[in-house]
Amino acid sequence: MGNTRLEEVGFSDFTTLLITETLNAVIVSQIQQEEKIQELNMALVMSLEAFSKAYISDDEVKSELTRLFTDPGIPDEKSSVEPGMPYVPVGENNSEMPCIREICGYDMIKGDYIENKNGFEITEMGYKNISRAVLMRIASLKQEGLRYVVSRGIPRVLVDNGKVSAKLTMRIEEQKKTSKNSSKFLGSRNDFIGGKLVVRPVNARGPEYLTVKTDITSEVEINFKTIVL
Image 1 (cartoon, helix red, strand yellow):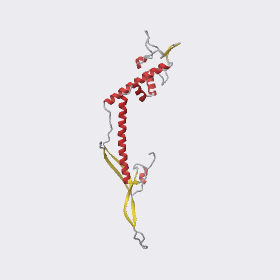
Image 2: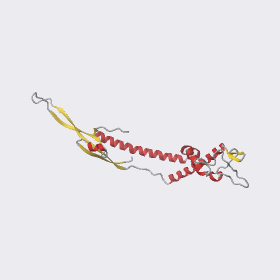
Image 3: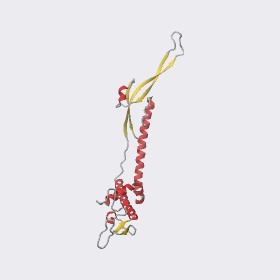
Image 4: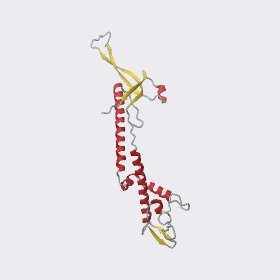
């Protein structure tokens, strides 16, 4: 509502609005919970490909690459498997470096690295394939973690009862009727026939509360209980 301030309204209108909005809030919160639970259950049956597209960002993959393939001689936010980085394939007398298969389970193939004057370097295709392997690794770990959480039961927040209260200023708006019997000496007679209770919400903690000019300062309190049909 922004900075909108409520003007004076009838007491019955205010109470009706308070009850209606409370009910709407409870219903909306329950619907949102059920939608989230359904979303979690659908995520469990997704393929790793679909799960990774839905829940894992490129930034997350880059961050994981930097964490897994770190090197003191490489600038921040860079990994040792970037395109152009040196690579030593596994051989009879040497181990793979960086240890790509050991770390993320990916076996480098032809085209993932090329020979240069100093040995071998990782290609753009190699970097993409390693990134994809890391992506699937993240997706698998996250989906398994989610499956474990769901298997233990998804908590639900149920609003079964509560209390809503609001500070109000009150005043009575008189309603009069004019008698048809009038006298030129006495003039018309106004008879009081009742009044309408008019209220306006106030902030008891705000500075304006100290300068309120009104007939009555009161509070309306509504206790409710939720019944599921």
